Amino acid sequence: MRTSFALLLILPLVAIMISGCEKEKEDPSVTLGAQANATVPGFYSVSLDKSYTMSQAADNEVAIDMFCFYEAETGNNIALASPGSGIRDIFTGDNIPDNWVTKNTTYFFQTTLTATQFEAVQDGDVLIETSFDTENARKKAKDVQVGQVWAFRTQNGTYGLILATAVTQGTDGTVTFKVRTK
Image 1 (cartoon, rainbow, N blue to C red):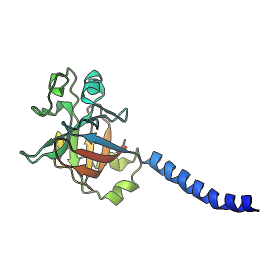
Image 2: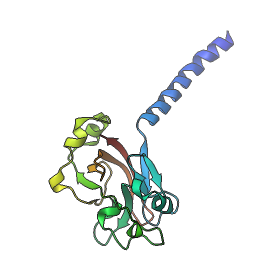
Image 3: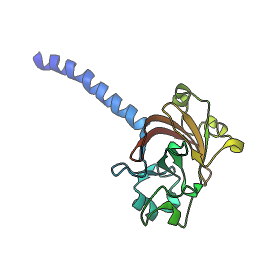
Image 4: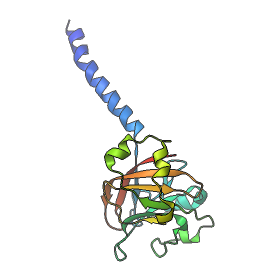
């Protein structure tokens, strides 16, 4: 009797834990670190859904679609750009994107979508592509703020949406976002 009662108490907890883990798998976040962040990788491949340190990115430059950087003087603050964006004098060392042979260019456009609207979008939805404004797109997502939804198009033609969920300013700062792609 006690065993049955204990099982009845434990089973709902296990179900809640499993459903929580499943939700996390369905909607993972990406965190990228700015140029002086020594613990969080700052480079990202959309097609591989993988983050890289700068030295790893230099070894996989053909896959890199975007990186995080911080620059307060120009109002960029925490921003996203790509190796082909022409961003210079941000990174230091031998593996800097300035020295890469392959410099993919990703374009960004800040949408008017809300976080709630983003959450309703699934990978492959047409809204992902139609949210991208080619004429007003730029080579960087400047001054990224929590709650903003940015549309992007990678050099290889992948469209996506990013919802910024956390931002820490500074050269050792970070940006965390959710991604949907088409």
